[in-house]
Every structure is written in C-alpha cells, then in structure tokens.
Amino acid sequence: MKHWILLLAGPGLVLSCTNNRPTVAAAPEVAAPAVDHMALLSAQGADAVLWQATAAESYRLYQQGYELARIRLAENMRRADKRPAAVIVDIDETVLDNSPYQVNAVRQGRTFDQAEWKVWTDKATAKASPGAVEFLKHAAQQGCEVFYISNRDIRERASTIKNLIDLGFPNADEAHLLLMDGASDKTERRAYVARNYQVVLLVGDQLRDFDERFKDRSVDNGKALVDAMADTLRQYFILLPNAMYGTYRDAIQGKGTDAEKYARMQAWFELNGY
Ligand SMILES: [Mg+2]
Picture 1 (cartoon, helix red, strand yellow):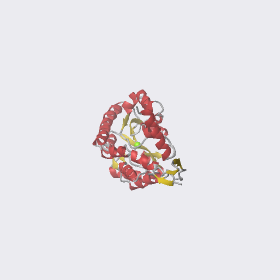
Picture 2: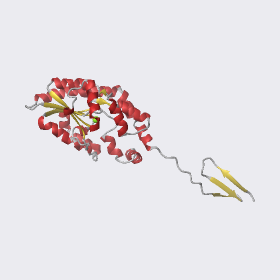
Picture 3: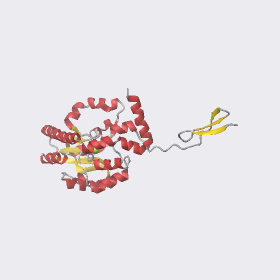
Picture 4: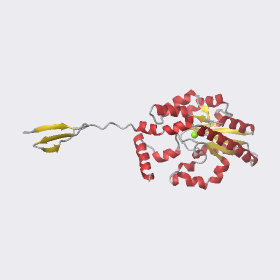
C-alpha cells in the first residue's frame, strides 16, 4: 500500500495521500503570533512626530500664530474695560514643546504612558514653542497677566513652574498655573480667571483650549462647530498646530485598549476611502 506524507511550505498544512486519494489532515494548533497593537499605533504616529519635531513648516506655523496673537491682542486691548486684562494659554504644544517625549515614545514603540510622561516633565527641560516667550513677554508689557491652564497633573506643578521660569515666561507661579485636578474640561478654570479679569485672548493647540463644546466631533468631525463659531474664534483664539495627539485622534480611536483603538482607526480608513 502506497502511503506518504507531504509537508508543504508553512507549518500547519499536512497532506497525506493514501491510494492516491489526498485528504487534508487536521492541522496542529499553532498560536498566531500576538499582534503588538501598541507598536502599530506608535509607528503610525511617526510622521506626525517627525513633522512636529523637525518641519520648518511647523516651526513657521508657531511663529505665524504668535504674530497673529500680537495683532489680536492689540485689537482686543482697545476694547478692554476697567478690569485687569488676562491672556490664557495652554501649556503643552502651546508654550512648551514636548516633541522629545513623543520621539522617545515612537523610538520605543510606545503609546502615551502617564509614568513615562512624568519622567519627561520632571526633567523640566522642554524648550519653548517658537514665538511663545516673546509673545507672552509682550502681553505682560501691555499690561496683561498670563494664566497657564493645562491638563498636566497637579503633581507636575513644581517641575512645570521651574521649566517655565527657566525659559523666561512671565507669571510663572502657582497663582497663574491652573492644572488638572480631576477633570480635563477647562471650562471652570477659564471661568475662575474670568471672574476677576477680562480675558482678551486665548492660545492653545486644541480647540477645547477655547471651548469645551469642541470635544464633540460627532458632526463632520467638529468642523461645523468651527464654522458656527468662526467670528469668536477669529477674534479671541489663536490655534497652534499639533498633529501628534489630541481630540481629533481620540474622536476616531476612542477609549480602551490599544487593540480597540487600532481596530477603530482601521475601520475609519475602511469607511472613508474610495
Ligand atoms: Mg496642549
């Protein structure tokens, strides 16, 4: 009786032939290699990190944003009432450049990690965003107090103040630094400043740095709301570029594990191609 076994390329497929009648034998269970979704997500952010860290275009956009900030500040100061004037700025990717942290995360194949982030902020060595120190010094000279409203954790307060002071930012002290104590929504903190000051300008890298309503990206990815609020945005908000992270990405990837985020992002590409 003719009986032979043929092993074909690849594990798992075994053809056995008996009397010229091939049958497929049950393949032995071989576990598929685990997909490292964290590494996949991290790698997919590489272009954004390169752009933020190296592009002369990104550098110029920051300068341009702060140039426009001077124009709007002058216009809005002319409308000022008797209350003291205040400028509110976000910190990360607005006045401080965290691209070294992001480069390190891509290099290690990691997504955001709070403990690693604190290792970075503890160093207090972030550079200033292009144009930020110059603009805020100018605003202070014009009689504005500067408030830093950031979703850095309150445990990062001392290192953040040190970083800001070392770079020469005005009003870099506890009274002017409103960090996250629970909620990421900055509405209450903005209202706290507005109780005693006339807020003449806000600067941020996220639309949520201006108004929490921009958290909702369910209609046209939030662009309809940008149009609806165009006049207010134009006069009172300077938006700076940040492709590395933010509400735009959270709206697509959602919350959960890296595998879930990756799957939602792939689904978005499937739905929105042609
Ligand atoms: Mg920011």
